[in-house]
Length: 151
Image (cartoon, rainbow, N blue to C red; front, top):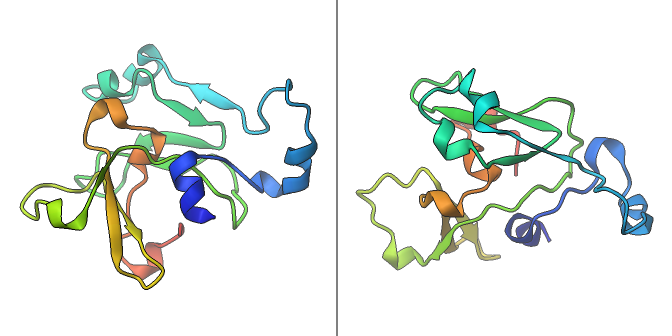
């Protein structure tokens, strides 16, 4: 179910909302999780140099994109509000790559691993192509267990 959420995208249990509320909402009503489009003009104030890449980025209203405090990491996704445990986010978009086709000498920091039930890597999702990126591309991996706050 979590893998499905990352691949196909949805927000559930955001800010304490129950899933059954989302199932019973009017289909013509606006999404329960409104999105905010960031234009190049808005981003130019904070992110010179990376604005062109982000000009069409659409973010859920619960998060923002900002400069990471980790040296060399560039931009990252940060919550604007408390996001309830169990909330599912997505999609993480990109090209599917099998493990045998990974170039270990290349910078693979825009790839996510997808695991089989036994813990082995099933495939990678590569978001290195700008036209295949979503806001999820800018979520950074934890450097250690203490920083881990997403699963």
